Length: 240
Image (cartoon, rainbow, N blue to C red; front, top):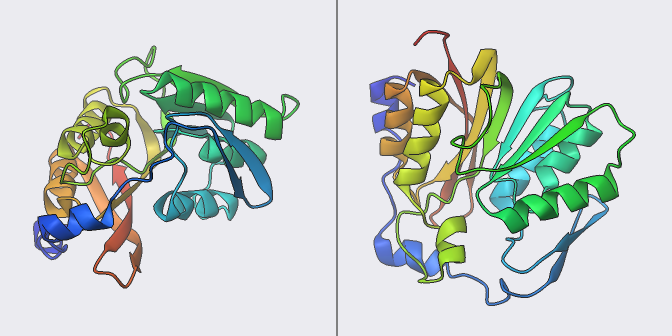
C-alpha cells in the first residue's frame, strides 16, 4: 500500500460503538472447552477463546492459503494453540508458539501434543515472550501471523481482558518495530496481520510502512454491524 491507499482505509468507529461491540464475556476466569474443525481444545482460566477473526487465520492455514508447509512459522499471540495445531498438521517445519501469557503457552503446548502428537515432522517451540523481546537468537521467520489486541478503546479494567482485546497501538507498533529492527523476516517471508476499524488502521499500517513493510489487503470482511475486518499480508525487502 502506498500512502494514498493507506489514507483510504476506514477511520475508527465512534468510541461508544467500539466499546459496545467489544464487551467481554464473563467466563474468562473459568475453565471452558472449545471445538473447531472436529477438534476439542481444553481452555484453562484466563486463556481466551478464539473468535471469528482468529478463525480467519486458522482456516487459511488449514486450506494452505497461508502456506506453512516445511517453513518456519511464528504464531504470535498463540493463545489456546489452534494456529500451532493446524500448522503442525499441515506440516510446518518449525512452529514458534509465542505468547506473553504463560498459561496460554502452556495450554498451546498441551493442546498441540494432545491433538498433533509428537510423531510428526514439525518441531513445536513454545515461548513465553513479550512479542519478540525474549525470543532467543534471531530466527529467520518464513511466516508470521498475528491477530493483535488492537481495539483502540479500553473496554475493561481487567488486565487479562486488556491484554487480549484493547492493548491498542503500542502493541502493534512494537510488533512491526521489533520485526524490522531485529531483521527477523526471512527473504520472501510473509506477515499475516488482522485488524479492523475498531482500531487505528491508518496509523497501524502507516507505522508498518515506516518500518519497511508493504501491506496488501489479503481479505476484507464486512460483519454488517459497522465493523470492517482486514487480513493484511505484509512483506519486507531485505535491508529496508
